[in-house]
Length: 322
Image 1 (tube, rainbow, N blue to C red):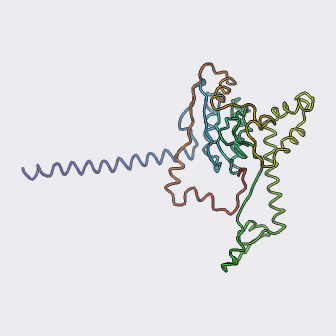
Image 2 (image 1 turned 90 degrees about the vertical axis):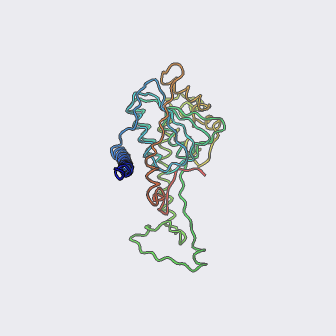
């Protein structure tokens, strides 16, 4: 009897430990399955259904990927909410991510008849302004920094240093331009022409999309200066106006307003009021913040290399300021 009394607590303790381990692995597996389903199927994690709300989406920091932002805009497009407020504080970033976000905003406006307002925080430059130009309205503080319409590509050139330390690279390539941007030698004149033509093409895309997104606003500004009706201001005149300022320079909010690059001056709360007015929302609207999905960041941190894998190339073309 004494032996049985001593072994029983030990047996229960082992059982609870086993159950705890199994429960941990069950919950972990469930979390992995949920993440995988969300990643593959692109299903919304929460539903936005109150049409009296303003959906708030923040773009903060360099634009390196569009996946999560595009997912959130798609979720907004499927919801009953009519108004999206995008709060921007970014120096810009990659060309393709900026273009993908721009396109999804345009689809929300044109296909789903949604209203999208851009609210500029301290900085909304280059790729950030590219995104803002797709919105119905842009509102910025007088001292906000915006603009910087332009394209940049940079890479190091360390041939002098390598020669000094006695390091030399051997390259075998399939074509003349395959190793353009290689840091172990200076650029050739042909490579410089090739890269400049690439930059020019991407720059033209930037200008065309700004003209397309903000044509009416620029027409209104130019109509007063040219003594015309807004409808009489041609696309060519709008394009010439944009290109005049599209040399990479940044504007303050006040300067941008004067040239038609934004629509009004104000802070975040002014942007909320503007969004509510345009959306026909009465009273103080509810703000639903659609936060970034953190699953990708969590699992990137668990994989050796993580996000750094995206930066392994020796060249990147950016819509980026500074």
